[in-house]
Amino acid sequence: MRVASGQEALVARVLLKDGTAGYGFTLNEDAAVARDMAAWDAFARGKGVALHSLLGGSYRGKVKCVKDELPAIPPDWTALRKDILAGKHDLLRIDPFAWGSLEMVQTIAAVAAAFDLSIALLAPNGHPWELQYCAALAATLKGEDTRIIVRKIEEKEITISGEAGLGILWSSEPAFSKIQWQS
Image (cartoon, rainbow, N blue to C red; front, side, top):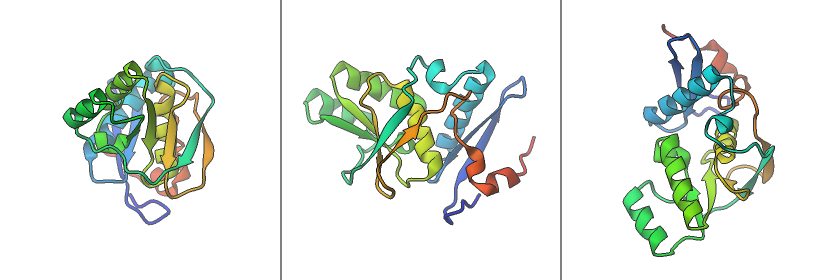
């Protein structure tokens, strides 16, 4: 679908056996990211809980968005592991859309916690859906200092949703309601 800014978004829907729908998206061309996000959204919605509750995180209310121009860490687990063991990072700048799955972000976060490293999640395009997804992920991570890195918008705080699923406000993009899903 085309979003209001003119960018294209790949949007996915996952249906559970009980009919619960979950949605995901990506502003890049990796369909796996959108499907993974949709599956987790459907699973959390099916359980009637927010993603952070499903994954044992803590509801913090808000997460801080900070401007940062430094690059995100490339999605190469072997290289990242070596860098962490060598003490090359104080802050792990992770683009959850580049790493491909929520499980990878959770794995990186667990390793970061073991080495007392902070995590910053990159919202590469500053789109509201990206910010809301990063806020949902931030609430799943241990530690109070997780941040969202933005490059294209002002620094601000993002409210972490307590709604079932990812808590993304899909209706913020008018074209979303016009998607004709196939069953």
